[in-house]
Length: 97
Image 1 (cartoon, rainbow, N blue to C red):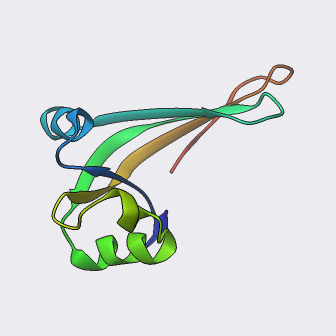
Image 2 (spheres, helix red, strand yellow):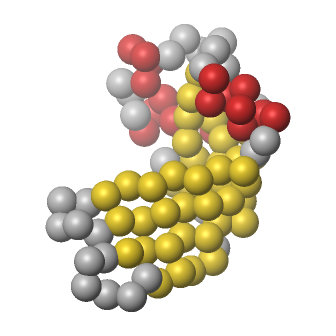
């Protein structure tokens, strides 16, 4: 979700990814669209213990309540984001946020 001009993600503090990001916060994610364009995000994961950020996530994505118990739910944002966009026909384009 986008919250307070930051890109947020969520996970459970019971998962390996949570422990991995706590010990090494370097974050990278990649996704592909149906038209064969993809984006790679890189940056540093910063966990946010603010209950307002967690409440906002549940508000924006109500289905999260079916997946996560509130005591296990963690949110983090990514700082120092570098986003590179790719396609099969254009040169990669990188922006820093």
